[in-house]
Structures are given as structure tokens and as C-alpha cells.
Amino acid sequence: MKKTNYSYIGISFIILVFGIYFIPKIIDRIKNHDVTRNESRSDFAGENNIKLSDLAFIEINGEPKQAPHFSFINQDGKTITNDDYKDMVYIVEFFFTTCPTICPRMNANLIQIQNSFKDYKNFGVASFTINPEHDTPEVLKAYAEKYGVSNPYWNLMTGDQDAIYKLANQGFNLYTAKEESVEGGFEHSGNFALIDKNGFIRSRVVNGNPIIFYNGIISQTEKVDDEGMSEEITILKEDIAKLLKE
Image (spheres, rainbow, N blue to C red):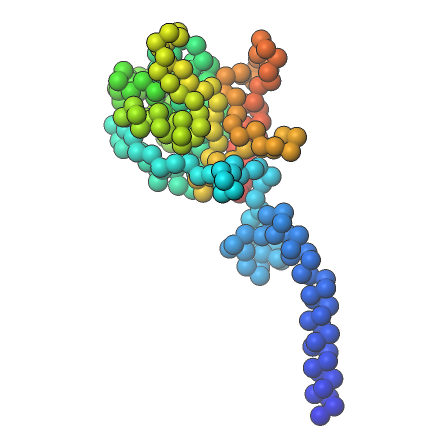
């Protein structure tokens, strides 16, 4: 009987020590996003341990913001939706083929990024024209060939103009508008949005705050523009690499 009592005492002591030593560590790991929902016991031994990167989730009203649903026609005449980017890291941009100002620079930078990740089958680009009346699939196809688009998951998409503008302004908060008074007849953001494998908008944190979007206009070779703003293609590449490892 005494042996049994001592066994219970020994087991209770082991449980107490485990709680004192391991529980705080597990809590710290959860706070640091080192534990995922699918983490198993073997993960604690270093097997199949998947860690989130240090990139922030963009939050709206306290909830991580996901890329909104979309369905448009690409340069090959195929219908493309969010599902085509499932389990992929991808960049979102809004442009138009006759843009005389920032679009050529943005897409030259995207080509450079494309070539940097040419060996990855889970990286893509989603480009939406803001002038769908002109930018038919045939026009987008010629544009893609002109710039050297080779990534099979780089879709240049066209469709209903109101739907595209809603996607840009409300879905991604990337400004887009038809404005006849400006050169080219349209205004739009020169930024890129970065989307992770689960469809969440992500960005790096600078001085305690997420940058949200990445400047897509200034090239790595330029380094800074006339106003002294630094290029962000370098950090975008770094952050794409981080998301590809998640």
C-alpha cells in the first residue's frame, strides 16, 4: 500500500515539474507564433516544425485581412479566380497597357522579381487592368509577350470595370480611378500587395508598424527616386522568400 502511495506522489511531482518548466515555454512559443494549429508532438523534437515568418498580418477591425474574391479573364482567355492562387505566394498590382508613366516601371520590376523566383512553382503575380475596355485578352497577351512574362502563374486580367475598381479600392485599398485630366486618362497606386499561401495580405514591420504595401515604381538600380524615397523591391524579394518558406 505504501509503495502505491509513493508512486502517486512521484507521478504528481513529475506533473508539477512539467507544468512549472514547460507550460511557460509553450505559452511563449504561442505568443511568438512558433506553434501552429497542425503542430504535433513530433514537432517539439524538431520534425516538421513549420514556423511563421516575422511578416505582419494586415488587420482590419482586428481581423487578418484576406485577399478578396475575384473572377476575371486572363491573357489566354481563361477564367482566373482566387482558387488558382491557392497555396501560392503572389503579388497583386493594378495597371493598364497604355499607361505612359508608372506602369512600365512597375512591370519591369515585376519581371525582375519573376526572374529571381523562376525556380519556384508556388509563386505568381495577379495583374488587373483598370482599362478593360481597351485591354482585351488579346491586348494583354501581346503586352505580356512584350515584357517577357514567362511565369505560368502570372495572370494579366480583364473584366467588368466596376468590379475591378471595387476590387482595387475596397478589396485591396489600392487607389484606382478614371481621370481624363491626367496623362493616360487613369490614376492608380504604384504599390504592390503581397499575399501569402493562405490568402492573407502580409507585409514587413518597420519601426513597429507594418508598411502594408510595397512601392513598385522605384527599381533596385535606381535605389532612390527624385524625392528621396528608397526602393522597396529588395525588401519585397526578401519577404517573398520568407513567405515561400512558411
